[in-house]
Image 1 (cartoon, helix red, strand yellow):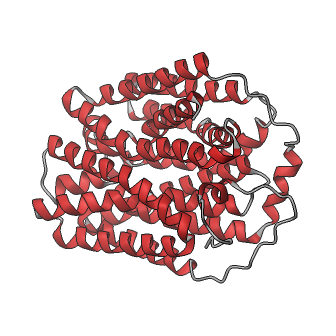
Image 2 (image 1 turned 180 degrees about the vertical axis):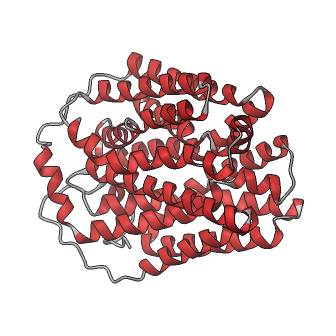
Length: 401
């Protein structure tokens, strides 16, 4: 495996850490600026909404730029954003500092996944994509406990500085070790646009939005849930979030194995298991030992949602992998924003203990969409396999929901 693949994964880890670093410190930021927890939640929602609205356009407009310099620029923006966030004198400045890097987020993610598949021989493509996706998944769940712990140990500004250092290290590694990456020959903007006529692609995008909204309606406020319902200290919350993250690493691997066997069944089992975990969290959230076990299982299940989404969406647009990934990023972040928004409404009206029911409702809707009949997609002779098809070694036929 080429060293550059791991550097791309490291960059993904830094970017996703920046996106989700506020989850564990929302209660601290709310107290610092004298705002409600649902208002503080807009630090997550605004970031996600910006990605949702601009992602595909940013990828389309940067389609002709050397991929190395494009990813380097994205990481540089994230470094500056974290510095500005740490120095923010008020909530408005902090919000602006969060929105700016959101414009670069989908560009890095889309290019990194496509670039990884081009850096190795065809037989190594599944491993390369899995490594990059692993960096993103680990950043999603391990970046949160890391920044939460630093905020508890030092202050909330330290959490942003730590995220900035991670992005700076990734930028230095990318500049030093990754070779120039000119735009692949034959890749045109018009060719990528054609995939937008695929109705199955749009169904998968809607399903992704609803599913991720369900995943984050509660997870986005997990620190608040553990604080108010489970009555935990800051250090205990950090440890629980670390447990969540550690379990997710194993869950990421397990999801990959399951997807290689049956995508549709994996998606349905994932949604059913996640619904069950939310119900259990409601029933036993006030008991320390049970909620500790539930958070561990929750982390193991949670990370599979990203791989399921990536697999289903990329399978519908193998001829435009970067645009397909950017659409997944955009609609996924629309799900983040929607989940955080709806979760905030429930918390305001009924308290944080009841936020799990919003997740349950959304996840049930996503499960229902998995039963919409899928039409087989005819592949033209000689058409290359899509990223998920190559990643899911051993998959027989197209089973994407």
